Length: 363
Image: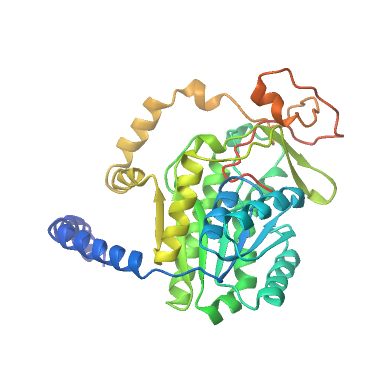
């Protein structure tokens, strides 16, 4: 057996690369033909029903607008109901037939059952489930001194996608619907200060890749993978209060229009309607996969050169590090935009405080 593995190690990698090189033009042509056919005869979302989690801001908000342009019925789910009201009005103006909003926590199975069941009661079906809730961090793993933040990050980035999927699957089977997942390039490309986020995203992608095979063609799955979307970065306060409840306190609420967020949302919805298995933005990140598989040391050397040791060790987030930070309150939305000095008001005791990267800002 050892000798057989030795021979396979020698023959399979180069043989596969040669076969792929010769078949690459034909594969590209077939992929283009499939893309063209699906673009012409893609799914018509007129009067279809879409559930969008994390719809109160960022990519979730922009995805809601894209489905609204296609005249779908929307169920918008987020923690911040006051934000959803304005987004629902915008979606209606853009063409959504009906919009229902629900305040819910996607890391709680009961809340997920509530908004899925309410969608069925109102619209009678579910065609697309779009999971966009996600939360990143910017601290080195060994800088953390309070591990209570670890399960919170994993709950949001993993279970916050799995629970809505589990509850909605029976209804998606009935409509031959589709699940859309908002993943990240960090699921396979190493980034400093994002170890827990990367681990959760890797688990998420592998979960849905396996689920794709289990569901066969009865329910489609689209995995959307993005690189660094700078315009979605926001400064905020991470709070753990009684019962390990998490609240996201943003220093500013900026209506996201234009730029990479809107473009990524457009690509996600277009890809989902075509039935694409993957949506990547930008796609040039894929070249690093070759280095990851065939030359991992080159990739590691490149990252070490690009990112200085001082930069990777400097904590830009104090979440979970145990460092005491003065509690500050909400900053007036226009203060950051106008360049004036914001006023701070106390909002009560904070367990953690610092900068988080909310790549799809948590509701």
